[in-house]
Length: 410
Length: 102
Image (tube, rainbow over all chains, first blue to last red; front, side):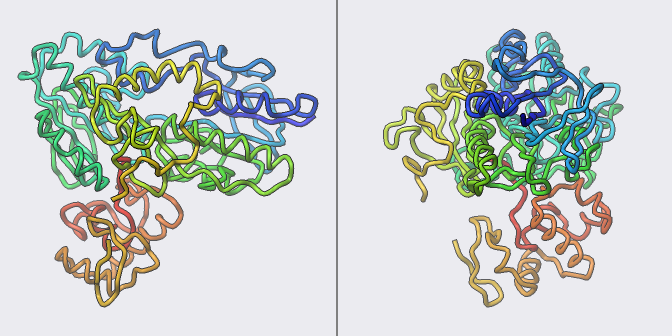
């Protein structure tokens, strides 16, 4: 018997278990998935939880429900990976593997910025990238009387890079609906050169910030959070005052990657861009937020990658060359507030373009344009996530590689 | 889009960043620096080399990376490339500016 071990039962790991259970011969292969946490969170829902659009129950389920029969599910902490010895040490046992899939994701590291996880953490300084942070923020917003709200992200790469923008748009709608928009001063603070950074998106969307009366501070590289003055301070000594700071801290890969000596500076595993094989060990494959590939860290990217990776695992087992197929494809709905959303579809090579999706010339979804239909798409996605995506069911008409059909290139 | 800088025809983005690092040379760097009112010193070159190495090895550029680079501290980085040090240094180094997905 041979062993395939998947580390992490988040979006990527769960999808890989579901793909592989029906593809690997049960006579020859044991599949094991390891994750110490019992709860599977629908992370895109953390954007909606603070605004009372989703409830707690809509963003979490018991992870076990999504692990298929025939896969051995171990709920233990992963201590260390020993890639040279083909083994993984768990808290009280050691697993040998023939093939390893690393799907350990990434998470916020507020401790990387001085003062961020200080005395005001989850009091006036919040994240919304964890269940706890998002819930604490909801409770804060329910009776917040207004003031300066600053929405900020620390540095790239972050999981779902559009989420801070979506947050500020939804905040505008939320306070408008509550009849208190005039009491809230909204500022978006980014380390990048603009709220939008790609030429087509900048041209199509820059008006949104002005329309919604959101101030933008660019090129802001945070040095520290000043908990006495309620300011964020950047290395160039610029400061921004806040009454309520909603920040996305530095994102880093899991500590187990660091303990195993397998990652870069941010604990991301060096990974081949198009095959998803690790660069250092040929029987180790990496998927989702754990990789260092220059694709967005997002569930849709992991979904498309999982299809290529499944094929490549089978090719690897058969001793055949791997497909250099994965193109960094991402397909994401972006909430813009007032029950509207954008849809973007892009990859390593092409920036988000305008057009129609998934059917060229028809749609019904519009790319890089606000529409109510796109917003329904985003809300419908929660059902798709739990019922199709995690189970590895292909989404109809959306192919793993990005298609240029229906897109305006110039 | 293409652009002529220092006698070379270059592929650039709409905001003037080279799209192919192999087209880059030191003369081009000096020209782009001049447009940003920067006279390149040895320290500048050291930083530019470091940036190119990071990009070649797929490491995302950020201020924390500069802090850990061991070749320059952040205040010095701001002094060398005033007004948006990452944005300007990447342009001179011929690599993509740090960006998001939209």
